[in-house]
Length: 343
Image (cartoon, rainbow, N blue to C red):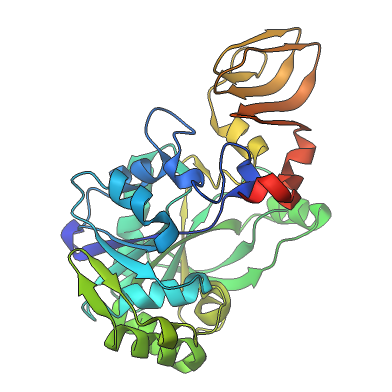
């Protein structure tokens, strides 16, 4: 199929506070240059550039950041009146697109180090979507991760992908090790390809509590240049659940396309450290810092010089007047901080 018939839908919401203090509710991680010089959102736009002009679904709080980083992408923007999780956000975009288009749903805050592998997997997924499969791009696992959902591979669908045999919630470590040893399981990366009409039909069938209110919100919405504003009152009536629960785990037409594309959800300082380039001792440093006899240490400072001696598996982040010090293991709990972490 022609790349120009694949329409990226970029979901751009959330507060990103697990990467506090660098990422905050006022300017979360998609809009920060966490890996390389461009922001995560700009990198998402760049790897979707081979396809059609994207649709960005975001909230009013992030609108300024989105419009400031769109560049020449030609994107249109749907402004969510409030956050109602991914199923409603995707439905908003679907109802603004032609029924026969293939929509490529992507989070805007993930890192993909191999854009060519991403594009190749997208083309396979789009070919399956044209056959009315609802397709997840899944990540070939490299470790027994407990922070991701898993999909089990079913029968092959030609040379394009596989039927999805089972969705598995985030497992404990023993079960995750079993998945890795058995093979045939992959991480759910939250990237999807749907034919618009197929997705909306499945949404009508399995989750009318989203389909009805979102249709009403789009019908009563208004255009404002490149922005579209759904009706707030109607949209508030939509159920707030993920697309996995609303459609993917209920449909009889779920498929999966595995991809090895150097993927990370950058969901914590630990995963960001894993995605960054490091020195021979496994340390990654941004800003002014000196490390002596350190291993597997991340230091990020926007000003003050940071000195670290004799530590292993530690994160030190300085952002303005906020300082975070945590072990790599403890980094998973940063999102539980209150007060300033939510600002």
